[in-house]
Image 1 (tube, rainbow, N blue to C red):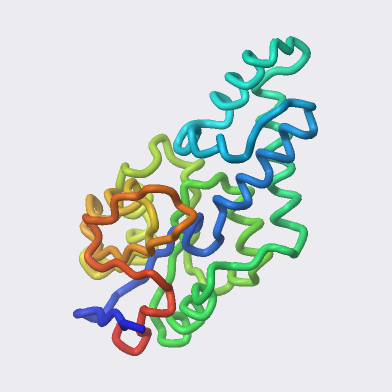
Image 2 (image 1 turned 90 degrees about the vertical axis):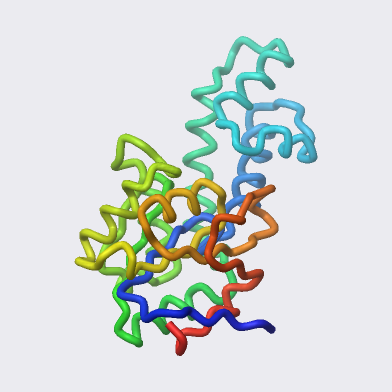
Length: 222
């Protein structure tokens, strides 16, 4: 397995969450299918790919329109999906992305300040932190729901660096999406991209390094 050797000592390490700490896309797919079943709507799982990157409201709205149903709304379906997603996360059956918790613990043990910067809503972020038992390792956590703009806007990473008291140029970021990488680079940070096969077709070319396995990151070289 190829190791990634980081070339300068990190002043801080900032984690994205979805696709990096939790493999969220397969869970979202499962929850969407459960939502269709709950409301008695026909939908083929293979068609989810056509809605990648689009909101649940848009997807539910189109399916409702095609069905001719007038007794349900996209907002009702989205609310059910959101609650069901939290229930699945809290079920204790979800595992973190392989190697990520070990990386978090190792970085913390090495004395490198850690931050979490996710586009997910705060309640989802808090649930993941508690379910995986990793809250205590982060000096700051920030949800995109607290900010006016989401990634690729760099604010979430700039604010995280400010909270840690570390210059952006000395921050390392672990991301898995095009927008996340753009946000990290716009914030002036070093970005490692994780090629998650469940994260859809993402352009990772702007990242400083790309890994296919979180365990490729050598903590001793950070």
